[in-house]
Length: 116
Length: 114
Image (tube, rainbow over all chains, first blue to last red; front, side, top):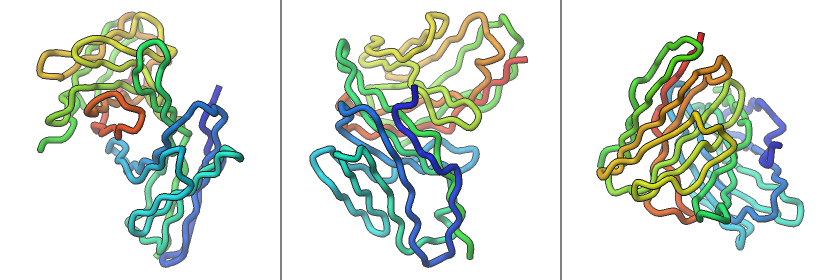
């Protein structure tokens, strides 16, 4: 039961253009959303996050948009650079009822290739 | 400030064996989570430790167990290894358990079960 979905396994974008990565979720209890970036042979690295009470968060070239009614979020990278080439994971956070532990649910990732 | 470190980086075991993976938390972090990432999938939550106690578990059987030590480092133990246990095992640390806590991941241990 995949609660966080990234339906595009790959995306290629020309350097300088905008990259848009999409993510859908099913669980309305998620209250915090994160994007992680992963290079080969490394662990995921935190990129940007957004609380469910907001609809936009911006950090430099990276902007995350959240549409709660559609249960959809997206990551915009402008302008895209070759160093942005990596696998991007969308994740949603929920607190486990019985224990209070923080559990991240990840999508399957989108491989972004930025062409010089 | 040191990051999250995991050992070993690679490991090969045979079916039925037992394995122990290790993780050192980022300095100042008191919460450790373990994730399993199968090929082509996103990481899946195994369990979380806070102040040396397991305080949350995902959909993994009891043969997956762990420990957290007073210095907040952690171990993941897997008994009776199965072929499907072949995956990248990621450790992540954070300060506290809030749902807005960012997790900081190590580079993982690639486990192959033959």
